Length: 129
Image 1 (cartoon, rainbow, N blue to C red):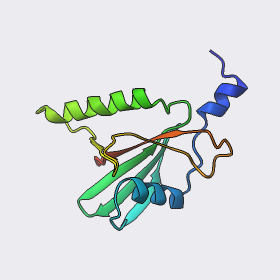
Image 2 (image 1 turned 120 degrees about the horizontal axis):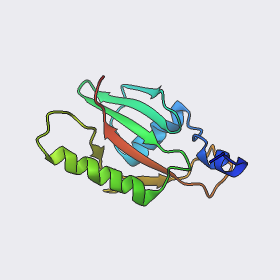
Image 3 (image 1 turned 180 degrees about the horizontal axis):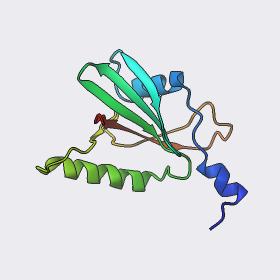
Image 4 (image 1 turned 30 degrees about the horizontal axis):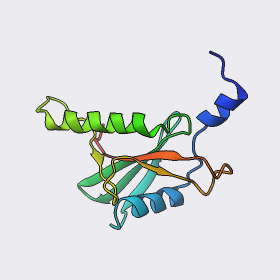
């Protein structure tokens, strides 16, 4: 299916500078001092590596508009939590609860001209490699 101007617009990545990612992280997840934050390569989402202590590393994931379906992202988060309870021979990122007790948060971005637009945000444990 060819992308139309409407689907191209809704699929666009969120405009999230590092300063905004830092604010989102501290507002939604923890007030811990951030040692390092940097954007990771990604196709449609915005992913940020966040380190708050030498052994405490996360990926802050801000979905594009098209993928910001709360029920769908919550289902993925629940799946990841279930995988974490199994004794499997591999590691899988685990969702971290927000200050509100949610695995997924919906936010508006001040950089988006569409003030009604909402983006799913999820914080995952970081697995090097």
